[in-house]
Amino acid sequence: MPTVEREMEIMRRADLTDAQKAGKVADPGRIAALMEQAKRVEVSPLVREYILAVVNRVRAMPELRWAPGPRASVWMFRGARALAFLEGREYALPDDVKAVAENVLVHRMRLKAEYYGEREAEPRNLVWRALNEVEVPKE
Image (cartoon, rainbow, N blue to C red; front, side, top):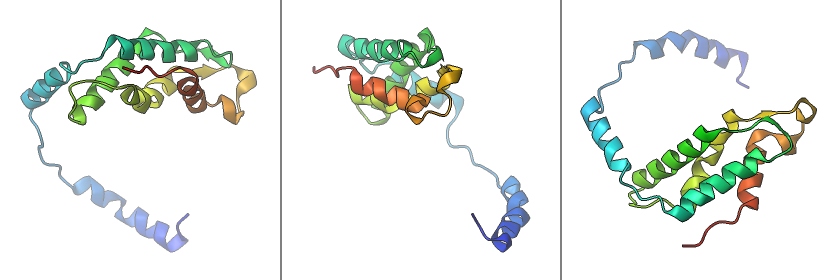
């Protein structure tokens, strides 16, 4: 934690960030074009099956009161494809799925009350457990 003096300085400067102006970095047409390009990234049937296997493994975890629904699979697919695009590839890899899994799944999970406070049952740890338990496809 900052010292009292440092925190006072932080509070004093808080309004300065509101005065900063952000410049335009892209127009809506350019963004739409990039989104269309990302849709051309290939996601093989093996990678799609891997997405479903990971999501289904999370769904089967007894610690969960609410498990991820079908949108989780859709957004893991889209996230993996977008990451591959941003990294300059024309195809998605299982590593892309792993990279987006936590961000896609954690907020779609709710623990049963008896698991609150257990580190192993934290949603992010359940996601990583699923990733470790599901066999990664070899293409």
